[in-house]
Image (cartoon, rainbow, N blue to C red; front, side, top):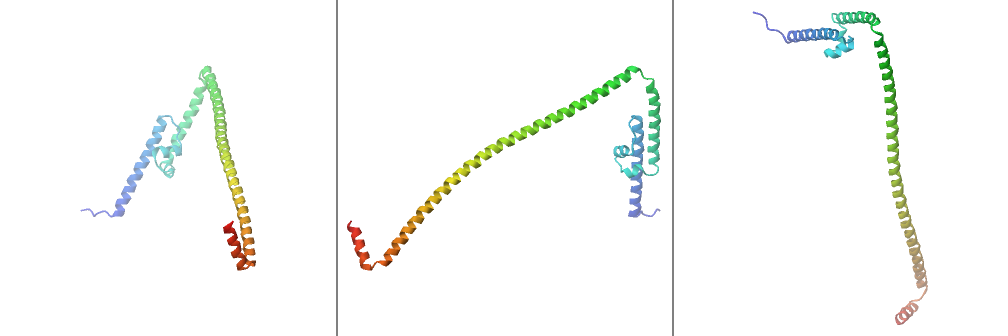
Amino acid sequence: MSEPRTPAQVLGEARQQDSRTKRARVLSVVDQLLADDEPVTFTGVARAANVSHWLVYADGVREHVEAARRRQARGVTNGARTGAREPAGWKVEKQLLQEDNRRLRQEVERLKGAVRRSLGQQLDQIGAADLGTRVDELTTENHRLQEERDKALARVKELTEQLSEVQDDLGSARLRTPNEMIFEVIGSLRG
């Protein structure tokens, strides 16, 4: 009978299996990139295989990626030799396409600039209209508050004058005798 496995053994075996699976996935991606004539790079392989960058540089994997890159480099060199034998019309066509691409890129940049300027002007106009409306509102409110202030100052002046008259009356009333005040009240009642 075999002894039962410990949790550490089970975990170790799972890690080894996961490592084998990931390494196999990396090798498969490298082969697929070569078959599709796509560039083989360490970052591209790691991304396509959904593994860490560390793994593609690990021993046993790095050598496979480097070998694939060397094969592609030889293929490019052979392709360059073949390109020398390509018809002259292809070279002219390629140059025309490159010039078209350059011209189109410049046109796109010019149009982007025009759109930016147009949007900026629209924002400025919207902002200016809103600011003009706000200035008008604040000016109206300022006039209203000035009128209220002027009315309040006039009322204060009026009340101050009344207070002064009442104080004068009170002062003169204190100087009169009680009999004089009685005669004054009787005179005001008769009149």
